[in-house]
Length: 162
Image 1: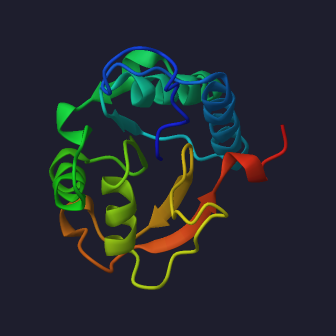
Image 2: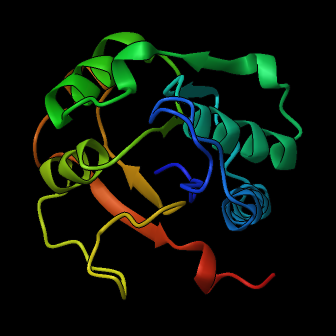
C-alpha cells in the first residue's frame, strides 16, 4: 500500500509530513475494505515517515489491530524495488503482509513482481496515494522474485463507497 495523501501545506521536512484530511479518510476506507474482504495482515511493515506510519495506524484501527503491531523499518523510506524485495524476502515469515511505503519504490516493486501489465489510475500512476495492490504468489517469501506474483486486486480509495 502506498501511503495516503500528505499535507504539503505544513511547514516541515519530507520525513515528518503528516496526512491531509483526505488522506486520513482514504486510509480509513482502505482499512475498512481490507476488513470487509477478510484480508487481515499477519504482519504490517511500514516506513517510519509520518505519512506512512499514520496511514498504517489508520488501517490498523479499521482492522482492530493494535498500533503496536506495526513494524517500522527505516529501510522502507525512500527504498527502491530491490530494497523492498529484500525486506520482504528476509523479514517475512507470515502468510499475509501489509507493506506501507512510498513511490517510486512501491510502483517499481509492483511492476517487477507482476509478470503482466498493471493498469494505470486516472492520474497515470499504478499506485496513486492510498492505493493498495493485493498480490498472491505460490512459494514462500524467500522465493519471491521478479515475475512470480499475481495481481489479485488494485484498489483505489476513490473507487470505494464512503
